[in-house]
Length: 144
Ligand code: FES
Image (cartoon, rainbow, N blue to C red; front, side, top):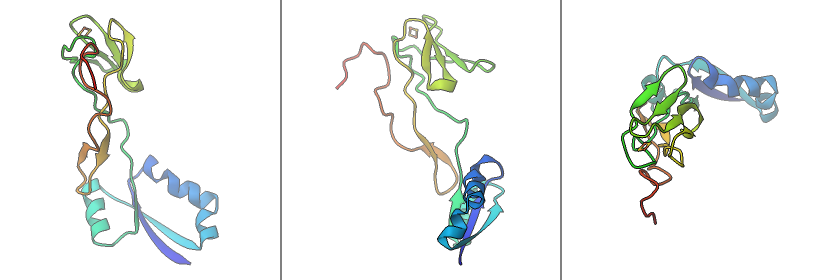
């Protein structure tokens, strides 16, 4: 059996480990995994760099970043309703659903707020994984 040292956060990020173990994946592949829980992402990254672990399981849950520029005519969407997860534009009351990709729920906006892809970098910081995948700003602007 080949040892495989895994580090993960407590909670849902280590679910793939338990599923793999439950279904016999490691046994079938001749791997003997061990799982340790990390106190934070910085410690996890350091441990990986130091070679103390072979694999890290992590996830970015419940953190999203959307453009603040309304897709209607460009006002700053700045009103967030915590209970409903709605983002409101004060200019013409377009309402976006932050829990569902900032889709338009109400108002004159015709497309969702563009979402910025996120990731945790090797130093444990939450950063943009890339630029926006679609144009930011009002829909009436010409786009190439
Ligand atoms: S600019 Fe946001 S609804 Fe018009």
